[in-house]
Length: 367
Image (cartoon, rainbow, N blue to C red; front, side):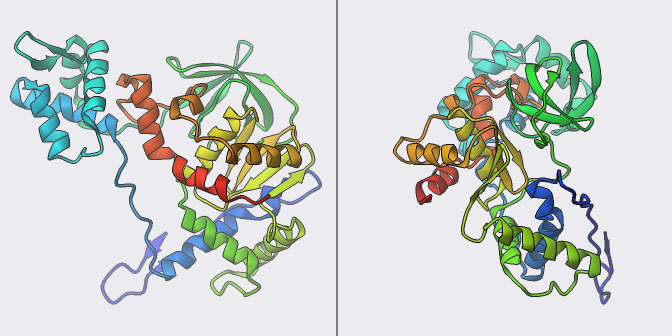
């Protein structure tokens, strides 16, 4: 929480987090006390006056859909060229090319959001007319959608799914591991079967996405022996436990660690880079999960992961549509349902993935 925001008053920030009690079934992620160290990294960066830079070049096609519909409503109709000039050429959506804009209009037409008369004017389609005249149209965003988790015919519950998920991936729900058998995006249902795979992470996160600088600061904390001045006794004990696990697993010299049948890969980069790396490794044939610091490979060996990285270094970067071919839950924003598959993949990449940084990381690996 925050306090002391009045002039002349001191600001106070109190950070709380929950860590799991360690036992003989604890994962490496738990042993690293990641949440506590992450909080410390964020506070350190605040004290150093670091601010996370905005992602200014995202496509924001969902918002563009709303603006196209709004523009038609404002003027009673608009040509495609004028809409592109106002919204893209001289407007805020300058990352959108003419070809992508044309494909977007075609997708909106296919979804009955817009139509075009023989003079070239764009109007609201049957579905668009209904949606624009509903009060919910004015909100550019909507609350996070949840998926219903179903095993056989029994509904286990619901959860938000933030990372991409495909058939044969694993999730944790109700304290058990499940393998994804099918995904119904229209009804937002994930069909699962029980699976004994140890302790894979879940496909959802309680917080926002982290920038690479936070992960780099976390590593600096792990490798330091200094006391964190604002940490209380309990927090400091957890930090020391995390540092001990970091050293015990040789993370000061290695980025890939074997633990039982799982392999933990540490890029020490942000969630957008890890998301891209996860897609690359799935495309390479691995079952992988993203959990905070780690990209986790199930039922494989460290040697297999290293061999894969060496193969990738000799290859060309794969195309986006190939990497996301099996991904189902790419719809994140209000109007994403109205995008073509190609545009959906592009907007997902621009907001949630950094393929260039991921490929650079792979090319620099010497393992």
